[in-house]
Amino acid sequence: MGTADEDFIKALEITREVEITVTGRRSGRAISLLVWFAREGDTLYLVPVTGTDSNWYRNVLKTPAIRLVAGGAQLAARATPVTGPARVGEILDRFRAKYGAGDVARYYPKPDAAVEVPLA
Image (cartoon, rainbow, N blue to C red):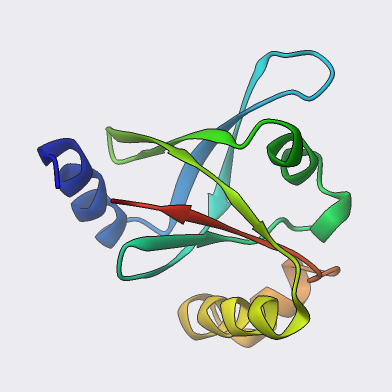
């Protein structure tokens, strides 16, 4: 594993949000936003707030290349959509454990999709 990846993983441990940059599916422009995340080993999980209706999620479907920034460290990776209800449920459980069930219920009204991003 490269030192850039190690720096990024260390940065994840001390932050609650990660900045993602995706490519606009119509504009082709880079679009950045802050999102919550959960991590398991070498995989980062993201959940789009409005699920399959979220613009950034729909952008990832068209262009899976994604850039992540945490605490000054960055990582370029490929995002994989997850839509199987059981798997999305497991990922949401990780979000609930990290951020609290109330906030996850409040901020994620349509939990029908998630995204996996490999860190290694």
